[in-house]
Amino acid sequence: MNIRLALLACALATAFTAPLAAEERGDSGAWLQWRGPNRAGLSDSRGLLPSWQDTEPKLVWQVEGAGKGFAGVSLANGVIYTTGNFPDGQAVVAFNAKNGEVVWKTPLTDEPPKHGYSGTRCTPSVDGNRLYVITTNGAIACLTTAGKIVWQRDFNTEWDGRMMSGWGFSESPLVDGPWVLCTPGGKDALMVALDKKTGKTVWQAATPEYEKGARGRDGAGYSSIVISHGAGVKQYVQLTGRGVVGVRARDGQVLWTYNPVANSTANIPTPIAFDDYIFASTGYGAGAALLHLVRDGSGPKAGVKAEEQYFLKGSTFQNHHGGMLLLGKHLFAGHGHNNGFPVCLDIETGELAWGKPKRGPGSGSAAVAYADGHLIFRYQSGELALVEATPDAYRLQGVFKPAFQQGKSWAHPVIVDGRLYLREQNVLMCYDLTGSR
Image (cartoon, rainbow, N blue to C red):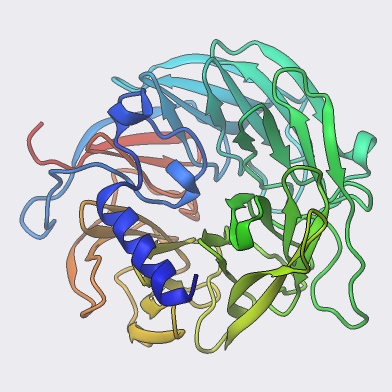
């Protein structure tokens, strides 16, 4: 499929079917993993305030108890889950979504892990009556939704786990059918697939050989795995220390790698997979690229190649760690290292529809989410901006600063059933976005 047809399909899916309505998912008011359905950052909430200029979102509740960290939240069956550091260790915490009361807290380590920018990063992945998390010192754990540990596996002792730099493992695990997947970053276990019920290894993908002079570093990056069916082959796509990789789902065979988008400090944003294409970007001056996945050979042993469609220098577009959204043929994100300049790109050509050097109403990197025709940019400095999700022009529809802000507001905003959930270190806040409650 050529890119125009692929983008048309993507646009139709965005407009009519993606993400699935909560009732279609069988879980009213759900946000089950990092960046929600399909890890796309798109909420299905409707009937939200079209502007914050006259009516700001109303604070529903604000509570403490999330611990120290930058992790996002997931939500299922009226319970919010996140991870945080406490004096007695790194833990998973559950809150009542109605009033914010802590339901349970389960430590996974004996003490808070030590690394740069201490605190958690992982958003729990909820699957039925179980959830999955990764600690920053490198361990994957399965818990029941009542807080009981079912199994744990250690990246370092079992897979010689490795991060590209010293800020702690930051991945949110991917649950796919009977498996849960994660990225230890080891030589013989760059990525592993585990039986989600038992934790037993299904396969492990070895770190591929890289060309001499390749950018980046060995080990895991700070990103999370997404699923692609590019070139007719199901594969797991991940941004690692050395760049983007595609791993065949059925057996863990590394199909392709793409290095130019890597930097040697921290590769962070979750890639975007659509049809036969992958879009990836990193900060620290690296840039961005659109890749076309094509079959390599024929027959049952045929592989997949990643062909570069275009590469954008960091001066044109680079996403630090706030994430990117694809709506139809347009990509929306914050541009710049340690900056969140709002931009809109035509993903087919890589050309700007609008954006830089126009600065948004906040400073630092900006995490972005979508709901009901609008983008919500959450800036590192705390401000939240409502922007129309249109390629026509940058149209700001209001700004507000939440009731509590501390340090660097890096946790991504989550919008479920008309409510906005904001994690700010130990504090969790819930805002009404409908103006009717």
